[in-house]
Amino acid sequence: MKMQTIKSKPVGVVGLGLMGTSIAVSLLASGHRVIALAPIPGEKEKAYDQFIDLLQHMDKAGMLKSDTKTYLDAVTLVEDYRALIECKLVLECVIEDMDIKKSVYHKISEVVTADTVIASNTSAIPISQLQLLVPYPERFLGIHWAEPAYMTRFLEVTCGTFTDPKIADEVVSLALEWEKEPTLLKRDIRGFITNRLMYAVYREALSLIEMGHTTVGDADKACRYDMGSWVTLMGIFRRMDFMGVDDFIYSFRRLFPQLSNRTDVPPLIKTIMENNGRGIHNQMGFYNYSEEEAKDWEEAFADFNEKMYHLASDYNEHKLGLVRDSK
Ligand SMILES: NC(=O)c1ccc[n+]([C@@H]2O[C@H](COP(=O)([O-])OP(=O)(O)OC[C@H]3O[C@@H](n4cnc5c(N)ncnc54)[C@H](O)[C@@H]3O)[C@@H](O)[C@H]2O)c1
Image (cartoon, rainbow, N blue to C red; front, side, top):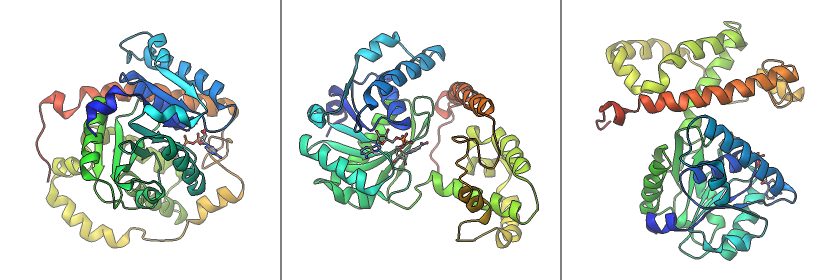
């Protein structure tokens, strides 16, 4: 499948929840036609309103080349899988449930042609398992977006055991045209790259709090104002170069033996869950929120993302003329 072929056809997005709508809008803004499929009744109308809101947000942020109507005209909202027949790329964004994904793949596979690439946005289910649920596993891979998909540069392309590496390379090239900074994970490992990195941090932070060394608020403050002040510019390896690799070797020796390596679920998060806490979604998590505060945080996040999107672009290494191969 050549990139040009994918681009000349509409891209299918199946599942129109938080991520499906956000991904569809990102594709529209990149100039694709999109077939947006609502797998559950009643979702179509809600999704259309969401497309309008998200496109308006992009417009306000100066991210659109045409008016919002042009992009809305490029999306076809459907409930019938037969509408995907033309697509050469279909992105599955349904709920994280293996049986539901299986039934969705079956419906997609029944209508698309053998050369269509099917991708999942799954955060946690191994691609090697999911690809066994489609007739052409070599054309199946993970395309993992970060929310809000239309305003974040992250995109993780993950190969399963049977994925054709050439297809993964083509998806990476395509993602560059979506103005993403794609990473390629050649072997499907649980948690992919980003979750493995982040979960190591979550585990250590939870452990520090449980041992009484710090509080949730202070652990967050340390992340926000230390890591937060350099991480988007340099990542972690350039950071080590910047600080002096020799210093890190010394600290690794002393600190690694003291870091948490627990393998069970930490009691702190278990207790919140047992008390029905779901975080900002029901205003109960590591922090408690009033309805208004929860809304204010969501708005602050949208605003912050908009600024970060532009800031990350200004300091992109291509723009700075600082591109060199890494090890
Ligand atoms: N939320 C995130 O930040 C995030 C980030 C990266 C990846 N993901 C992944 O993206 C996928 C979708 O997540 P989301 O956050 O958009 O979820 P969501 O709950 O907002 O939406 C899920 C969608 O799944 C579909 N669905 C629900 N029940 C279904 C059923 N019985 N049959 C068929 N379809 C059904 C619907 O279209 C629904 O809108 C998941 O695999 C998730 O792991 C989510």
